[in-house]
Length: 214
Image (spheres, rainbow, N blue to C red):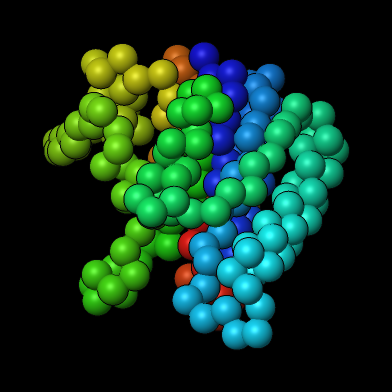
């Protein structure tokens, strides 16, 4: 189904969290991965020339990607890496074009989940990439007394989905018994692969946000 997974990656905590989940997913599918890290040229070059800055950024990005080669080897997942400068079309388009050129059939990445003014000001590379998808559909389905997991499975079947991606609270013990888990129910009964990613506490995300973009 998915033979090559493109994983855009930066040194942000949320990006790293998403990349690790995607790497585990690729391992289960016996798929290879392509780690992509996009760097953007700064506006001010100071005492260095533009080419010197570009070479330094390229070198640092490649060094960062080397650590992910080690992660992939530990998980026994075939991998390759690309460190690339953002094109004039933007980081989102650079990622999308790179994934297409490298024949990837899945892109796995995290989103900051910004809301309100933050979302308007900062935008979202994840959302921008969604705009490049040739076909997408939004389904709003009321549960009407049915279990949510059941509704999700019915929609996935009706729309011939090949993959279901869900977040999970990561409850355990007594909390899990009381609250249950939609993600767990879907995973147990789905006829197609299910990718579950555990949520990251928002305060941890906010406190460790360097100004970088996947």
